[in-house]
Image (cartoon, rainbow, N blue to C red):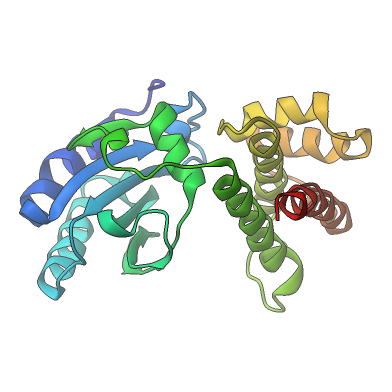
Length: 257
């Protein structure tokens, strides 16, 4: 992994030792992925992305113990509030609407799985094991059709938040607009290559590979990803880029249908 703040390393060590204690035999493994393992971690804005895989759903007692533990640990390590911990069931991995939990923004709550192979491709390629077996020993096979369908869903999620949702709290946030453009670059990269990389790397690829009219907002998103965003990327331009991504992936899905 890239060099990370000492408290981030401490958080990962804590998760790798304390989750097995809290969850016992129910816990299959704990894995870190995302910018931390893709040499793209930025302490100013990156999250700490982890997955815990269980044999069965959390009991009420386990959920309470986990909430209590994470709340207590966040008092001594502020990075706990930047933790995004997905909790999924081993026998439901890659299934749409599977049972799941999510710890995010300091809160543990129910969050049904969308069967996202993009995350698991990331885990398989660059992820690190904090506890448990290598993920390749239990993750179902991921084919290109599954990936393309997941990429299409990701475009839909972005469109919903930026365009369709009347009272979106993220639409007008400059950093979210930059994030959305970079995420679209990563979606297009994965669609074209079948691989998953960091958003900055995908954006640099996009500047060489997608149509020239989108280069200006990609460059702006890259600049704003490296500094505190000062200007919002025009929503009309993001809308056009969203449609471009949707059309690109939709064509492939239709041809495969």
